[in-house]
Length: 395
Image (cartoon, rainbow, N blue to C red; front, top):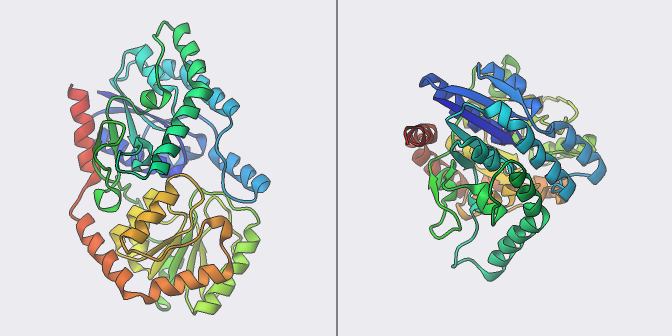
């Protein structure tokens, strides 16, 4: 069977879907993997057929950071329409002959493509917040989600329906409902962020899909790890950071203030490499090999990094930029895995030093992290998701 995977998002969306793709290939299925162009080298490394599709988020985020001074902003109506039109116009030729289409991220036009090709569509999400609220949620939360859903319809429903009519399809009534599809696959861990019954859409929650690393830790990292006490990892993933030299200075001061060794991921922020005896800057690292050897992590609150740290059994601190990262910060605090922290835009030397000190000195955080880790080690989100997708193919 042939499965098409269409992703419009960052590396945090790509990695777990690549794990799923490799599992499907191993089971004898054919894959077409459509994702933003900056992911080509990663996907090819796992011998998965790749088609560059969508905007280059690495370039856009870097430009956005320079203009806005930090976190990303939501797409404008013009940008939403441009990308949705690109999906509806270009993807049919790429995806024809598929038996199932899996959409991830900002793929408002992909369900229309599936309808046009008469191929089943499923949306895959890594955080429950997109599935809406329940009747038990605070009024403001329900109001906020309802407002976002209404604004999405206001901005782009007429545009999508015009495109659907052009290809002989009936109009949709609600963009969000069409985006989510008939049955959402929620590929995140119940132990970290369980979907509550009563949300707006049908779903099955499987678990986070870990992409296994192909290589061990670099020698330089191994040498740093064994040279002293366990360090703290700092990394902000695919998020943009303006004035990276500012943060290099902050990290130097924090290391001295806290007497804490640091491993710092350069990431998409392209942080300036400024290694010292107690600070090591690194490129992409295999989290499943690095994290168990750390004291704690400081990060943006991304779902994939959250899952990796939880599996490693170490405390964590999130300074979120956008989207699901704010909800993940709440979950970290709720589960007792680390202290509450401010948004990234308010990050300072004193704030970071205080958070790291609290994180590494509180035995409760470590105890809770180890307990969560033991639960997660008994689960296999990839196998559960593979089983669910193959059941969809059989049907």
